Image (cartoon, rainbow, N blue to C red; front, top):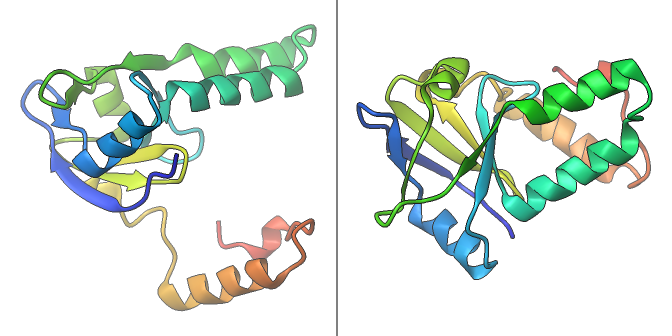
Amino acid sequence: MRFLGNIEAKTDAKGRVFFPSAMRKVLQSAGEELLVMRKDVHQPCLVLYPESVWNEQMDEARQRLNRWDAREQLLFRQFVMNVEFISLDGNGRFLIPKRYLQMAGIEQSVHFIGMGDCIEIWASQHLEAPFIEAEEFGRLFGERMSAPANTNLSNSDTPW
């Protein structure tokens, strides 16, 4: 599954929004029906995971976080507790619950951003936040992509 692109949409008064048809086709071709929504861990956006991808994320978190360590159990609980199962109606729409609209600062206009195996939903007014200037992006991306695959650049090398 590869979700790509930046697609603008609008929510209605109830918080319903049309799931972009190009992304719906990717979902359908993979045989996925359910999506899992949660607020992003780092950014003021929502993330939609196909159910199988969400299950992989949960499995990885469960493997990395020790259930017998109170602090790690707290991390896992917080990661999984604020999720919402999403299914599309017959028209290809879904409801973004009010608490999620508030968490992401969504008023009406949104952008669906394909992130490979998941989709981010951004309030249009917050869309500039996750990006860096084109020149800086080119430099950083070039550095990272030309580094050996097993090398991690330190956090001091990134602007975020």
